[in-house]
Length: 392
Ligand code: NAD
Ligand code: MG
Image (cartoon, rainbow, N blue to C red; front, side):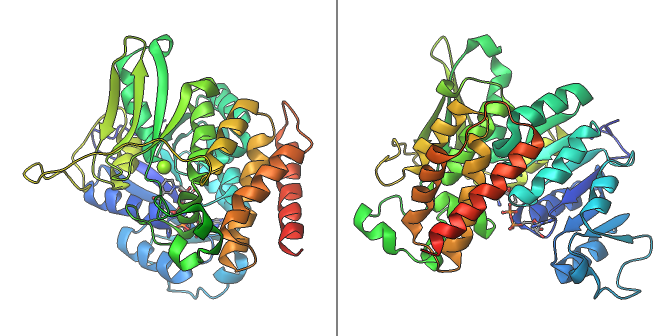
């Protein structure tokens, strides 16, 4: 059952990854909704301090700390009255499935987000999906499960939210191309020779979006767009050849759909994740919210350019993995996650990230139609291979 977001009592939201960038923006949307949305559950990994502050502000029924060691420091009286504490990933999976949950915001970062998203889809929930890694790793399995349980997956990723909105203008057979826009990240105009030496501090400075560290590095390598191509392939059930990438430095046009008659529909808004988050919470309605708005009294311009495959080889890997399907997405995702970790820890160069991902994508024991265990096995294999590469 999904609470009707247009009328009270509002829908009850479970926010997974509430202390992160998307999680905090979700709480902004919930607080600004004046009761249309309420917080049923907040979950985070180990950032207990911020989690307790959020609990005091929105008074959820449940707070879940996934890391037991981090939870051990929470004393009696730390939570507001009426809020209970649960600990560990199993507790989270169980609470996500509860009848009291109307919508689940899946905003844990990385492969760690798969299991709780899977639990929500298995329980037939409406899922506002920020954790793109779930679809990158196991897109066909997750979409098949959603079909079976009646779960609805609504995108939070701004590109996919834009595409979701534009697709309302025609039928699936009328779609000719889907164009995902990309900011190009902080190194859009950097020369190829300087890229191996970029530092984590430089790569963490995104020109248009403020996001968690992992996706910020993914934006700098443009691996984020690779992951988004795969995400779009499964979410919208389109052939990989339908999908293109276009660099658009202003991050105003969030993506576009071209229909067979040549008409191109774009969704535009200032870069502010509160809008796609709210769209996924209020869909099929639209409601007023806290997201930034355009100021049309100022002059403005929009630019577009094709991505440079030499400096940003990750984009090609995304096209390749989206076309191959099977285990390709899981291997690319795990290799990238581990390589980003290696880069942030100073063990790998910036350009090693795409290089190691490309190599593992090529070398891995590809399977056409893996089950979840095989996905997990290849995820672990790719991580080991990256660790071995980093230590040579
Ligand atoms: P973040 O690093 O800011 O936050 C991550 C959250 O996940 C934190 O609350 C953390 O406690 C939690 N977490 C981490 N590991 C966990 C684990 N093992 N178990 C439970 N919780 C865990 O990340 P973010 O930038 O908010 O991104 C979250 C997801 O949303 C990612 O998949 C990202 O690709 C996607 N996304 C983010 C943005 C953005 O603007 N930040 C935009 C589009 C998509
Ligand atoms: Mg995006």
